[in-house]
Length: 121
Image 1 (cartoon, rainbow, N blue to C red):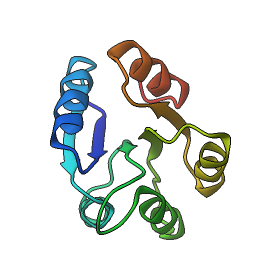
Image 2: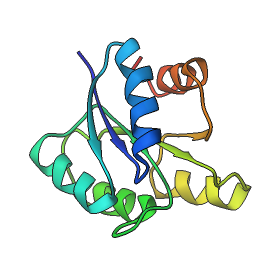
Image 3: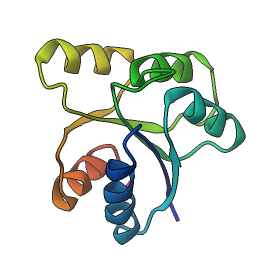
Image 4: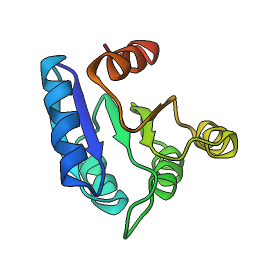
């Protein structure tokens, strides 16, 4: 069973994403900010990370940069999931090592397609 770490400071978004991912047969873990997510990845690297951009403590971009610099053997796929939709944000995310980008609000079909694109669904 594939694993997904949902990183978002919104409990509502985490709950919605968890429901969708569990229907796609993912084992789901959650983190409320980038620092918590980084700690989780050091303990147990997920197959994919669904990552919010704007969070307190450590942003999604800071988390992604540290994750990619960490030199971990089996890097997870990272799908940014955010309301930031201008090309400069998308380009910055991809250049920092994100594999895909999905806009909030999202639905099951959209998320499933993005997960297929990165090869985990």
